[in-house]
Length: 226
Image (cartoon, rainbow, N blue to C red; front, side):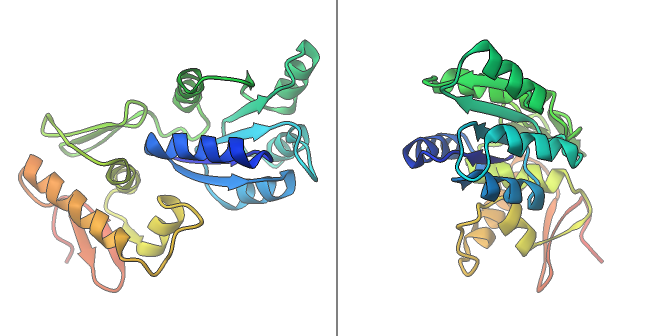
């Protein structure tokens, strides 16, 4: 899953980015409301964490404009403004939840999981293709009942593939959706992670599921591409 953090305090933004990456999420960061709104419109995020007091455009304005454009991405507002009027204003603008600073990561992750369960993507929390199951909320995957011992990035790859079964996935798509915007596109780390995921899927069950199409990308399906 991919999250956008819109926070002007760079220390807080770095803290959130590090915490979510350790939990296996891809994270992008914006430090003002204009940049945050642009990223939210261009990229497909599963959730936004938005501060209220942002330079150039407030969090209220950012969320209101997203809702007016038809976006239903879940939004959790993070702010030190905790008056009832501020909470009401944030929710009326279109936010789904509201968390005041300071906060603990346990509560933050619990609220994020709750929003993702009922979020606007409509993808569901349990993904199934053939004998593979992926629980998007618990970050657990199985094949033929055997738990897959995946790294956070391998889990994100499997989640991305299982959402697009039997479709060609280009390497550039993986760079955009699974890795963050600061990733070096010249690195071979994508191929390494895909190779590790293929091996672990093979160790857990019979038959290949992940194929490489040279010069094109990858495909997640039960039979070898023709």
